[in-house]
Amino acid sequence: MSTIAAMQLSNLPVFQMMSPKELEVLALALKERKLAAGEELYRQGERGSTCHIVLHGALSIQLDVAAGQRREVGLALPGEMLGEVALLDGGPRSATVCAGPEGARVGELAKADFDQVFGAGSPFAFKLMDLVAERMVGRMREAMERLVAAVVLEDESNAK
Image (cartoon, helix red, strand yellow):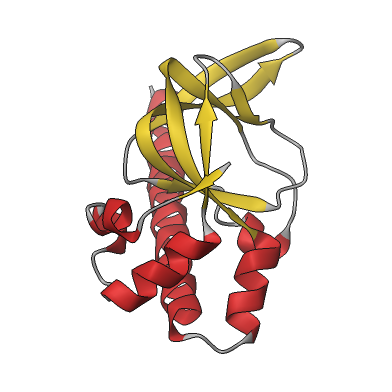
Protein backbone atom coordinates (compact mmCIF):
# COMPACT_ATOMS: atom_id res chain seq x y z
CA MET A 1 0.00 0.00 0.00
CA SER A 2 1.22 3.47 -0.79
CA THR A 3 0.32 6.81 0.69
CA ILE A 4 -2.04 9.28 -0.91
CA ALA A 5 -1.25 12.89 -1.80
CA ALA A 6 -3.29 15.62 -0.10
CA MET A 7 -3.84 17.11 -3.58
CA GLN A 8 -5.82 14.00 -4.60
CA LEU A 9 -8.10 14.49 -1.60
CA SER A 10 -8.63 18.22 -2.15
CA ASN A 11 -10.44 17.41 -5.40
CA LEU A 12 -13.02 15.22 -3.65
CA PRO A 13 -16.26 16.97 -2.63
CA VAL A 14 -16.46 15.03 0.63
CA PHE A 15 -13.34 16.84 1.89
CA GLN A 16 -14.04 20.37 0.64
CA MET A 17 -14.53 21.65 4.20
CA MET A 18 -11.01 20.66 5.26
CA SER A 19 -8.03 22.99 5.22
CA PRO A 20 -4.84 22.09 3.32
CA LYS A 21 -3.15 21.21 6.64
CA GLU A 22 -6.02 18.91 7.64
CA LEU A 23 -5.87 17.22 4.24
CA GLU A 24 -2.15 16.61 4.82
CA VAL A 25 -2.96 14.90 8.13
CA LEU A 26 -5.61 12.77 6.44
CA ALA A 27 -3.31 11.92 3.53
CA LEU A 28 -0.66 10.70 5.98
CA ALA A 29 -3.19 8.45 7.71
CA LEU A 30 -4.67 7.00 4.49
CA LYS A 31 -3.14 4.09 2.65
CA GLU A 32 -3.85 3.54 -1.02
CA ARG A 33 -5.29 0.18 -1.97
CA LYS A 34 -5.85 -1.09 -5.51
CA LEU A 35 -8.55 -3.64 -6.21
CA ALA A 36 -8.87 -5.83 -9.30
CA ALA A 37 -12.23 -6.15 -11.03
CA GLY A 38 -14.66 -7.99 -8.74
CA GLU A 39 -12.18 -8.19 -5.84
CA GLU A 40 -13.81 -8.01 -2.40
CA LEU A 41 -12.90 -5.08 -0.21
CA TYR A 42 -14.83 -6.61 2.69
CA ARG A 43 -17.63 -9.09 3.32
CA GLN A 44 -20.96 -8.68 5.06
CA GLY A 45 -20.69 -9.80 8.69
CA GLU A 46 -16.91 -9.34 8.99
CA ARG A 47 -15.73 -7.12 11.82
CA GLY A 48 -14.88 -3.67 10.49
CA SER A 49 -11.62 -1.92 11.26
CA THR A 50 -11.27 0.41 8.28
CA CYS A 51 -13.12 3.14 6.42
CA HIS A 52 -12.64 3.73 2.68
CA ILE A 53 -12.78 6.65 0.27
CA VAL A 54 -13.22 5.80 -3.42
CA LEU A 55 -10.44 7.50 -5.39
CA HIS A 56 -10.99 5.87 -8.79
CA GLY A 57 -13.42 3.37 -10.26
CA ALA A 58 -16.56 2.13 -8.56
CA LEU A 59 -17.41 -0.18 -5.69
CA SER A 60 -20.45 -2.44 -5.77
CA ILE A 61 -22.37 -2.59 -2.48
CA GLN A 62 -24.10 -5.96 -2.10
CA LEU A 63 -26.34 -7.68 0.44
CA ASP A 64 -26.60 -11.40 1.08
CA VAL A 65 -30.23 -12.25 0.25
CA ALA A 66 -30.15 -16.05 0.29
CA ALA A 67 -27.61 -18.83 0.68
CA GLY A 68 -24.87 -18.00 -1.80
CA GLN A 69 -26.83 -15.18 -3.44
CA ARG A 70 -26.14 -11.47 -3.32
CA ARG A 71 -28.04 -8.46 -4.57
CA GLU A 72 -26.41 -5.17 -5.55
CA VAL A 73 -28.03 -2.35 -3.60
CA GLY A 74 -25.76 0.53 -4.57
CA LEU A 75 -22.56 1.85 -6.08
CA ALA A 76 -19.90 3.97 -4.43
CA LEU A 77 -18.23 6.32 -6.91
CA PRO A 78 -15.11 8.49 -6.67
CA GLY A 79 -15.27 10.83 -3.70
CA GLU A 80 -17.67 8.67 -1.71
CA MET A 81 -16.85 7.32 1.72
CA LEU A 82 -18.03 3.96 3.01
CA GLY A 83 -17.46 1.76 6.00
CA GLU A 84 -17.15 4.79 8.25
CA VAL A 85 -19.21 3.20 11.04
CA ALA A 86 -16.18 0.92 11.62
CA LEU A 87 -14.30 3.99 12.88
CA LEU A 88 -16.84 4.26 15.69
CA ASP A 89 -17.65 0.71 16.74
CA GLY A 90 -15.55 -1.86 14.88
CA GLY A 91 -18.74 -3.92 14.53
CA PRO A 92 -19.78 -6.25 11.73
CA ARG A 93 -20.00 -4.96 8.17
CA SER A 94 -23.57 -4.42 6.97
CA ALA A 95 -22.79 -5.27 3.33
CA THR A 96 -20.24 -6.88 1.04
CA VAL A 97 -18.25 -4.42 -1.08
CA CYS A 98 -16.46 -5.42 -4.29
CA ALA A 99 -14.59 -3.51 -6.98
CA GLY A 100 -16.56 -2.78 -10.14
CA PRO A 101 -15.76 -4.25 -13.58
CA GLU A 102 -12.82 -1.88 -14.12
CA GLY A 103 -11.34 -2.33 -10.65
CA ALA A 104 -10.98 0.46 -8.13
CA ARG A 105 -8.52 2.48 -6.11
CA VAL A 106 -9.43 3.44 -2.56
CA GLY A 107 -7.94 5.31 0.36
CA GLU A 108 -8.08 3.21 3.51
CA LEU A 109 -8.22 4.70 7.01
CA ALA A 110 -7.66 2.23 9.82
CA LYS A 111 -9.59 2.62 13.08
CA ALA A 112 -6.30 2.50 15.01
CA ASP A 113 -4.95 5.47 12.99
CA PHE A 114 -8.19 7.39 13.42
CA ASP A 115 -8.18 6.68 17.19
CA GLN A 116 -4.61 7.96 17.46
CA VAL A 117 -5.43 11.23 15.65
CA PHE A 118 -8.68 11.61 17.60
CA GLY A 119 -6.95 10.87 20.91
CA ALA A 120 -4.41 13.62 20.20
CA GLY A 121 -7.30 16.11 20.03
CA SER A 122 -6.64 17.00 16.40
CA PRO A 123 -9.28 19.35 14.94
CA PHE A 124 -9.14 17.17 11.81
CA ALA A 125 -10.47 14.20 13.79
CA PHE A 126 -13.43 16.24 14.98
CA LYS A 127 -14.20 17.36 11.42
CA LEU A 128 -14.01 13.78 10.24
CA MET A 129 -16.28 12.72 13.11
CA ASP A 130 -18.77 15.43 12.08
CA LEU A 131 -18.63 14.11 8.51
CA VAL A 132 -19.26 10.55 9.71
CA ALA A 133 -22.18 11.67 11.89
CA GLU A 134 -23.67 13.73 9.04
CA ARG A 135 -23.47 10.76 6.67
CA MET A 136 -24.99 8.38 9.22
CA VAL A 137 -27.89 10.73 9.92
CA GLY A 138 -28.46 11.14 6.18
CA ARG A 139 -28.55 7.38 5.69
CA MET A 140 -30.91 6.93 8.63
CA ARG A 141 -33.28 9.54 7.19
CA GLU A 142 -33.20 7.88 3.77
CA ALA A 143 -33.88 4.50 5.35
CA MET A 144 -36.76 5.95 7.36
CA GLU A 145 -38.26 7.52 4.21
CA ARG A 146 -38.06 4.15 2.42
CA LEU A 147 -39.61 2.40 5.40
CA VAL A 148 -42.48 4.90 5.59
CA ALA A 149 -43.07 4.60 1.82
CA ALA A 150 -43.13 0.78 2.10
CA VAL A 151 -45.61 0.91 5.00
CA VAL A 152 -47.86 3.33 3.07
CA LEU A 153 -47.77 1.06 -0.01
CA GLU A 154 -48.56 -1.98 2.13
CA ASP A 155 -51.49 -0.16 3.77
CA GLU A 156 -52.80 0.96 0.37
CA SER A 157 -52.60 -2.55 -1.08
CA ASN A 158 -54.31 -4.03 2.00
CA ALA A 159 -57.09 -1.44 1.72
CA LYS A 160 -57.98 -2.60 -1.81
